[in-house]
Image (cartoon, rainbow, N blue to C red; front, top):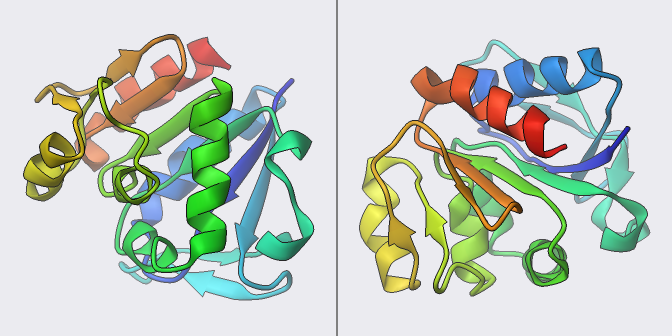
Length: 169
């Protein structure tokens, strides 16, 4: 079973974390939440979910994990302002390990400059940003690229996102 690093902070899209995390755990995967400090609690933008942070970004390495999960919402935009999270995501993309991201999650990958030449999707408001970053944008419920990157657009796409993420894991 996979040990999944989850980059998350306040203002994440509640169901884009809770639904996949629940599905991953149900299948026996270990979902580890990572933020600036372990023990913090972060709140979803809808106010439906509060997540306790397992690890500080300073105490983990991508080599400790088998896959990366980046839920959407405003969280990825906040995280990409911190070089530690950008470097962490970049190392996953460069290593070929699975990266699972939905909605605004690709913003972290844009800042990490890791989307060039990759097929991907994301929330419609970041389509142009993804294209400027060199991604081949597809307006589809789920896009799997290179047996590594799974992307989806929004909460409506969660069933397809979870299905393809679990296949890859």
